[in-house]
Image (cartoon, rainbow, N blue to C red; front, top):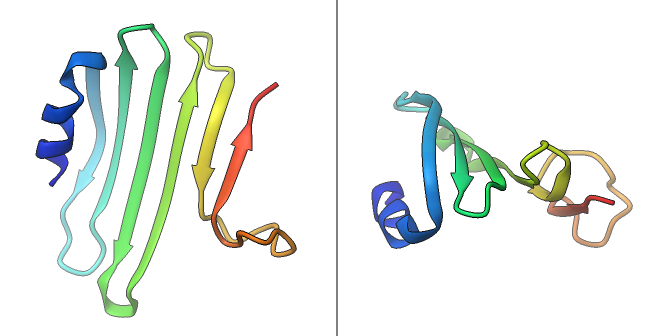
Length: 92
């Protein structure tokens, strides 16, 4: 599935680096960084825990100087937000 997604968006990806690709039967963990054609940076992390059906994710899109554009995640904080546990953080 990841390979299909990368191929689909190859026209906007300048370079890519896999930071972690642990393939465990119960808890696969994947982290990557992409430099896009506009020099912005997309980092993402996904962990899936099959035994309990949980998925943890973080997608962070940054300017070339690493300042935040947007981040989407499902960290277990900000329980008062209506979209809990899914969040969108917008940079300045």
